[in-house]
Length: 491
Ligand SMILES: [Zn+2]
Image 1: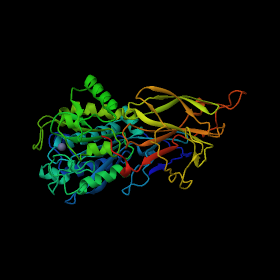
Image 2 (image 1 turned 135 degrees about the vertical axis):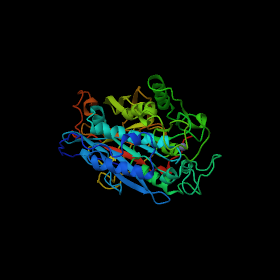
Image 3 (image 1 turned 45 degrees about the vertical axis):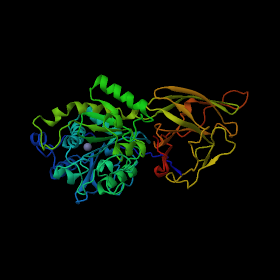
Image 4 (image 1 turned 180 degrees about the horizontal axis):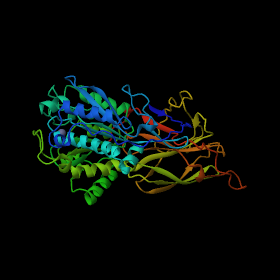
């Protein structure tokens, strides 16, 4: 079943933006933090200081407990002027920001975790440094950071395996490798200690719940490790390139040309076959663009002679690039023109993003309140079920059915003619693009209204009618979520 989450935004709230205030220093002295890796206790202290000092941008709470009962801390960093994403019950997390009077737009969502393996301290510290960079940058009035946090949410789980971290061991307390415990081809590779079943461990279960409940629409997921100096993209399970290889190769080439020589490879080939990882889960089940970031090969030491921010400076540059360009890590379709003549729609679409999309389609609603829509080639509308409540509209239609869709390659354009002769097209109608953000089956569907300025409808020989009437304040029309449990895996 495919489920629609239809979001109709008609808010007329005016929110006055506040400027950040430079206030207290971060708690733990830099000289210690730069050379001594975090324990669970010192991390807890540092995170509490951040959330106390910068409540405007830092939300901190526990998403669950480790097997030994330590809290699994989540940091949410963004300009929360438009309302915080979170609560501990994960309610009200709509990821919106206000972009003008009564106009809301979705924020970009980045998800980062560290510390799956308790003895890979540099990976954990890289997650910490990312959080620190954006928090301190905002506090110090860095305009680029302020601008980024106005339109981006960073969700950072720095230390997933706090028990293993404090014991300085790879495993959790049950001697399970947490990064083999995810529900994506769990225990189908020759790996050791994957646990008794997928998500048998409280740490991985909590992480997966957070992904599904709070950040299902993230357009970047980075999981931090240490072991080899490399960045790994899916798959670990298979040697083949992933469906969105075009995007991964683009990122690889850009990073290698402009930022760092760090190898960026398919995990199976770049490292070794591995299954049940958070990276493959993040891509294969959640549909995120995902990377495992392995900082280098040092393990088992509890501190570093060279200052951390120097030692991980190049890795931080890569992280900035990935975060600051998150807007591009998906398909971004824009309708250049839409002309209707005798029921035939000639559609010109550009893709501004760096991901391709393979089964985009065009939907027609007779008016903005219509609870049914028309598809190309159909003689009757598809009913939208549920109530008029914007969160409860649903459709069982399978949009992946061949014949309805068209493809648009990354940073490219497509012109296609779609047959809407069966639909009662008028100037009252509303057109919407419906497409997946990436090629991978599990990637999220999104629905976006066609800008009224580009649509032209010719109903007879009398010429073009005025552009269809549309909602002026409406930005996000419909966002769709797939029931991921029923999603096919791509190889
Ligand atoms: Zn690791």
